[in-house]
Length: 299
Length: 299
Image (cartoon, rainbow over all chains, first blue to last red):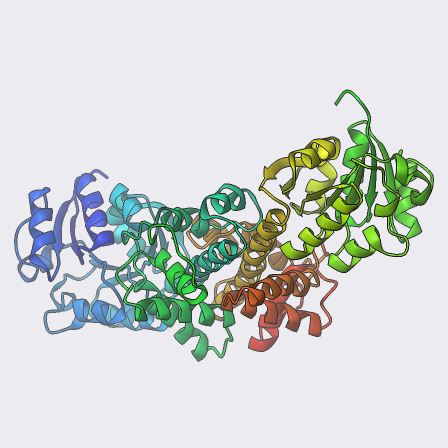
């Protein structure tokens, strides 16, 4: 990058804060925006720009939308305080929430009517990778949208996938979330099943990662259960939302997804136990409660 | 190894033949035994010993039992032609089939009554690793059993796990099979779900292995579906058996395993479609049929 771009990151949660910081580190002028004042002030102290979004929106090159879901994305772009009507022609919206492909196409169309570019750009990798500018971004949109978003993408992504037309990014994200959610629940099911047969979580983690039963999520989340540490790096609450999106898409496509459905029920049970704010590996507590097992940390 | 041991491998299927060959390559005297004459003759041509099992059983140091299930294991050891009553005191049975921990304990007890050692030693890794002497062996038993089995274990295993008392090996294998079976079905579910949203199997395999949704099975079996190649490296029929064992153990422990149960239904549906002898990735055909999709190779 030879020229500093003007970038706003809307949504300074665990992911968005790291993404905004990565843009800052790359030398851009970055505005951090959130409904909560604390992260906004913290980001300004880190070197972010001051000034209200509505006042600077017309000068921005890139608006990165890193909020929770489709409703928040729509509100941020086109709600009463929406930023899209204030943006200049040819600037680009980079939409990172997990949404349905149809929703992404609707947003892209509404942006297009205003002369704005739109990148369907769900992210994967977690808060640590977001902070390091090493996200995987499953992006889809026009060449012009990719070009306009390049300053932000280069700063935020380690792996940038170019997946085709708007909607293809959200489709791939849904596929990834289906697998990730099922694999977390499968890890919890297998580890607690093993405990009923005398296989300790430690022994499980010593053997299974070297066998055909392993997964990325097993190796990432398994140690949380073995340590009894449910500090929420990714919350239980993510999964009723994301697996719900997957199953909404599947229902519209008349696609039967029994493993996804079973995994969703386990995450709903965890949320029903009051564990929604804990790390998603806490789905193991549903299995442990059902089977009368004591997990590490619960002695 | 300084001394050649006398080893019989009972069951010369895809796994057993490779295990017997690995023992041969390590310099031992090896008898290959099977109900089918063809692999027995082939193994003798490869350098295996001639002579009927009943005639040489009393001279063996190690008997490796590499058959399909518990019934075959019991028949091989204690049936009308069973080898256990013919073996010499202090020799060892290495039992490799996927069985319940209770069954393993029963076999070990019956062997112990005859002065025989018993190693509960399920295997993981597939036919190619078996042929190369690079299996993972989830072994459990006494120190004496490990020592007596060492010539065969050293020849067959890349990773030898020592998991405690008899039953612990079968327990760990059940945990691994739970995960492996669920992950194969999840791969099939995700890849076909993606196809309904315009994500091709090729694009899926380009992106997902670099994301949090990946698994060992996804990376191993995914290419089979993308290539439309269902040459049975591991058959669909394995999974009704192995997930059935998992769910039998779970039921006895009053352990609720909804993902395992959902995966089993998909493999049963595949077997019901007449795909039992195909590669286990053919479970994707259940999803494709339900959703009206055309998989690669089915055009």
